[in-house]
Image (cartoon, rainbow over all chains, first blue to last red):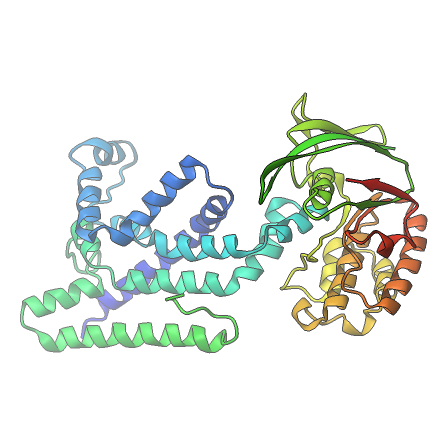
Length: 223
Length: 204
């Protein structure tokens, strides 16, 4: 069995989750405060990948980042960056596609905390950042863990959007889900089964680990 | 001296109502704020603390402008640094009793004194969920005092304390407020409850 697609998938899921954690936390915090029209629009855009067919998102990303014209050409000309058929493109697509899985649980958890918690912290002279770090974040730990696991697990299983923007280049964009599809296409059910089993087992183990390590407060991904 | 002249719209079951307050609070006084439910007692404290903005008005504390809607100036709650006891305590579920106080101040001696005052010395490692209602309320009072505030705002601060404990806390709190040279506003829907500590009153 070629372990390349599995490592590539894990690398993609790890980078996507880390990036979304860095950008997602402040974004979720911002969205959780108030309900202006701009926030509603941004939240709707972030949520779109949940309901949009992955191929639609993949198609638009392919068109937007095509090096032949528009944004893709500009990026290629000025920064020598190419997203189409590259690992960078997979990361970009995964970040966009998995964003609601990171933002959603964190935003809901922050909104679920009483406003008086941050107010109490402010009256003690603490800044918004310190309040977020020392009061809000520790109190949404279970939801944060759920968001991280959901994002990671969702990225492991991405197919349509990844295939559209990345194609099937071994070592670069051929992630496990594409390797499974490829193996089935060429009637190599043994390989398909191996990849599927590894993905299944890996996902099961990380989800179980979360529940075991955080038995008291972990939320089910379905909550 | 604290000069308050504010108007704040409030939503009630019957629609909108306007809280209008125009008063002066003497420094060092302990003022009882009372009135019927929904009249805006808690809102007034939050406006003074900078947690809620008034539609109109001005708040001046010791000649420093804290709020002035005419010039759109509002001092941040962090800069006002009032001691605030929330009606529902607003304790941090992730912190122990000791961590609550350490979050507010680095003064270990002051923390020990407060723990003794609140009779919580034996519960320092407990998180709020393992404290009784009365213990939680005492912790909320200690946390507000931890920053040694010049202005102390307390929203129903003794409601969960039993009669004996209420007497002890009120008596000692009086001394602490005097020692800190602090001005205090205490909201209560039961005026008699705080008579033993207050020396001024404000009816809403």
